[in-house]
Image (tube, rainbow, N blue to C red; front, side):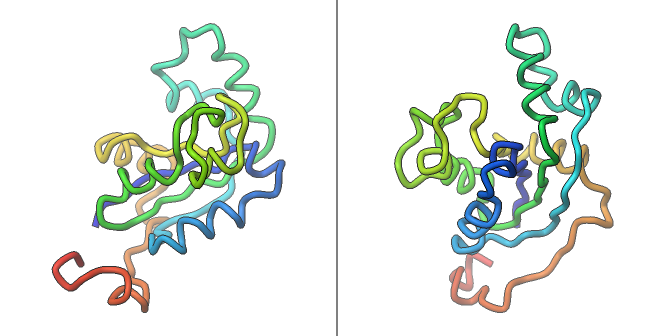
Length: 153
């Protein structure tokens, strides 16, 4: 099964939305393959957001992402990258559809609750950036037969 990478951003932590967001992923039937809390620093943020380093808002982004610790997660499931991207919604929360995580919990383009990998290739890079191999676990849910048809497992 495919993996994706998630950051529950400081806006999630500060607003006590961690349980709400994680519950949505679990109710969907996604498997948490890795999870931990950490404090991001400028070095890892420059690497993670390398495509944004030259943008004028980058210093504000760094400050925002270092405001509190974050929770990083690896989720596993069939087509999990596209499934999670649909669940998360548009980057700017004001444009995110109701029913999505950002649509239900956010109002900002920057304080947008969660980061989610945008492709399986980037997910692999991001997982490796934030997790050691021994921090990722391979197991199935006891309810797997209720989540997927036999030919989808």
